[in-house]
Each structure stands twice: as C-alpha cells, then as structure tokens.
Image 1 (cartoon, one colour):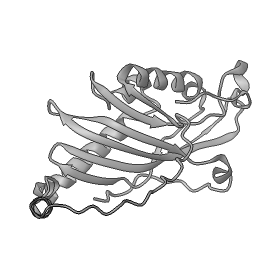
Image 2 (tube, rainbow, N blue to C red):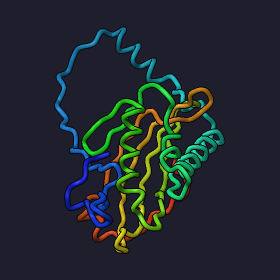
Image 3 (cartoon, rainbow, N blue to C red):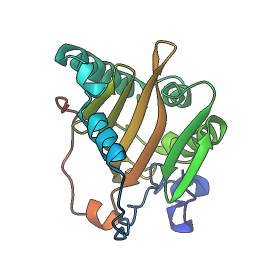
Length: 216
C-alpha cells in the first residue's frame, strides 16, 4: 500500500480517495550484466546435464489436476476480492497464511510479514475502499502455472470501475502476480507483486477485462 498525495485526498472531508490499489508503479527493467565464461569440471557438467533431464515436479501433475488447481485458485481470488462482503479486509487476508513470512511487493516497497501486509490492506480499505460508490472488481484472464501438486503461480490483471464520493466515474486497474503454496491442505499466497496502470494510460483505456478462461 502506498502513501497518497494531497491531490488524492478528495471530497468527503479530506478522505484520501483518488487512489491507487496498493500504489504500484511499474518496476524498472533489470540491468543485465554480461557474465565471464568459467571452465567447469567434466563431472560437474555431467551432473548439471543429468539434473536438467530429470522430469520437473510440475510435469508430474496431470492435466485434469492442473485444471482443478487453477479453478480452485481462481475461485479463491474471486471470493476474497468481494468488495460487497461484510468484512472486506478479512476476505482479502484469507488468501495469506496465518503465520510466517509473506513477501508483498508494490509501490516500490517490500513487506515481509503478515502484520505489515494486514496494516496496508486495512489502510487501503479505510481511505479508499470505503469511499468507492458501487465498485465492481473485474479480473482479466488468469495465467496459471502449476509448478507442483503444492505450488502454483497466478498472473492476472484487474479493473475496479466505480464512482467517487462526488459521483464522478473513476477506475483503478493494474496487474498482479501471486505465488501460491499449499500448506496444511490450504492454498495460501507466500509471495506477490502488484503493479498499477499509470494514470496517463488509464485516461485513454476504458475497456473492461472480465475474468476469462484459464491459461496454463
């Protein structure tokens, strides 16, 4: 979650409204540095080759199981992001483990604990979510990579059309990647990264992106 500018503290008694969901500017592309060639012992080369030829854990998951995992994760996400739920914050936090490290990157910042993540989500809902009029959370096509029976990655886009407290149409949108792990029989997010569509792009982009079929 990010801090909000003075300009974003709109109507309704100075409440921060013209907002960003967790404020995620796009990350700067990585700078790739060339690597020097190193001579490797033959035995190490053979070991690397043998390891590379071994079937991955993901390849042991049959297509039916992959579809089932994708359906499960997509259903969880839809349910958690119900902005009309009685307790929105609890719904969002249901996607994360009850304890242990949770890595969340957004707005150029990284948090590593459930408590810090919960604080950010509560702040977002208090200053932004509560002031959205008739919001609808719409998901784009989910790209699901099942890495093993107990691990998967979901990347998708989102769009939240709504009206401001003054009745003006407004939309927040972006992309989200989440790493899920199954712990104690439950799927939870252990790492995530969120990025927001820049305002200048949003101004000319009015297309909705309802969640479609899975890509995996």
